[in-house]
Length: 441
Image (spheres, rainbow, N blue to C red):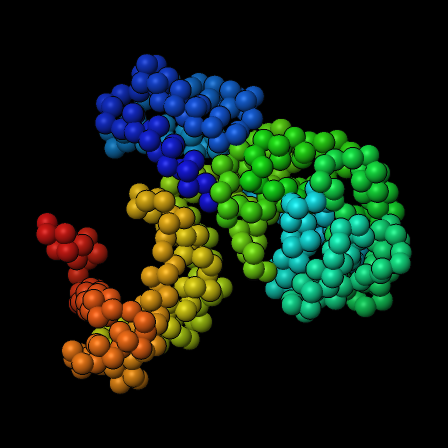
């Protein structure tokens, strides 16, 4: 997510690191680079100009305290401006006091509207809501089939018809929701390859007919500035309540995320970060700004971990670590838990400073599969007592896992190092002290 933008901003701000004071000259030089980076990321020109002007005004004349470097101060100012640019705080769905809450989903064809509708239903269901999906996209081939398939996958009912018009489907879906005691209706409307009058009239008619409490505009973040232009055109006709950015896990440059709020005046409410039904996140401007600047997103990482890890298992694991009984079987089980949190590159992007390790898109998921295969090729006794794994056992494990003896040796050595570090922690050594020893300090 924004790896290229993060990397380029980091390079641009290096010019200020090591400076003893903020001057007009060194600030202007660094911000020229920041301006170029943002324009390369396809951020709206007017947004970039306003963004840079605000930073310059706030940076010049600021005193730098002894504990803070000029580079750190500028980064803090940039962080604050990024947060302000993207909306200051997260924006919630407008839920109605009357049942059901009606949510209308609009956007161009190919933006990910139908998939988002399913993801949103899954998210709301997990929060105790009882959603109903309505298939009002009657033009795209297999659109109704896709929504019905998603509904089956997440166990959420879908109202559909292959003989009625989109407006009629939307109205009947609301009545059906009331009959079935469903408290949220998510209406997936039709899109086109480009904005046209017929599509706009239809979504306007649906809006007039069902009076949605929330209208969400879904846009593909990978199309950059075009996404912002499309968002503005839709908003002029629909006056929607919020934006959904999809495919943020892909090769997106960041222009849409950084421009859309300033241009349209509506908040980003959700971001799609993968194909799976749980790959939908609420948008937090402060957390996104932190990620963009390579500062990680520990809060989101902890939340993902809390959703994924079983508390009883975690307590048992802690006890094993304290008693020095952590085994390869435990290690394997933890890998499975981490995988549930999402692609490894996404998990890594939430760790502060992880961007310094290289392009997070290059995180090798295959290597993780090799580790799993090696552990699964061991007997139960070998996983619990790795010290019994001699030369002949290593050859057997390598053959069974389709790897080499060298890879088996590497895993066993890494596991031994991990056990040593855990022992040091349980003996009360500080993290800094342990790492200092590891690095030969």
